[in-house]
Length: 115
Length: 111
Image (cartoon, rainbow over all chains, first blue to last red; front, side, top):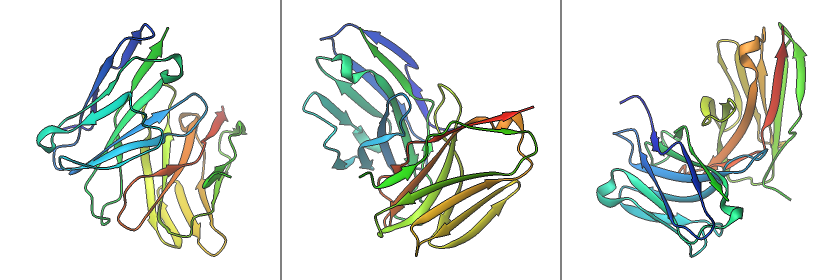
């Protein structure tokens, strides 16, 4: 396992369409995070999972966004009825949780462009 | 006011210079402090992390945390053109849940 894997790397979609992104974390990591990064800004937290449980969601995560992590393995992030403001880099990270190992390792991201 | 403040730069220095990058923060609950490097259109890459106050050195990189001042720094010695990237500071509290990032400082090392 060489790291966090995200698919697709790039996605162009028309406004109003639904999109889904996938993240495969580092295999022994029990925590998985989604962040959103816009140009010139640092990543902003969206949500995180410990195993299969979604433990926290940011106010940034509107009702159009849903994330799942079935069986505590890979995760998906779906955006329904996309808007131009959703254009950003969506980053997934994983860590071996509970505070002893706080390092989060990021994937290469999915760059979403809504036209 | 943002929880973590970081000067976005850009910062341009000659090769071989010592680079100092800094962040300030307002949340006294932060216990873990990280530095990430991000190349253009790539994901952030963890450089190093520090727990609570103190210094940590890793090769040409030194991280410092001053919790009394809520100020963290990253020093890069003998800077190389390959160090040109955006440097992000990030922090989290006990329990290591979500990271709070600074805006990132764009650094260019000129040959």
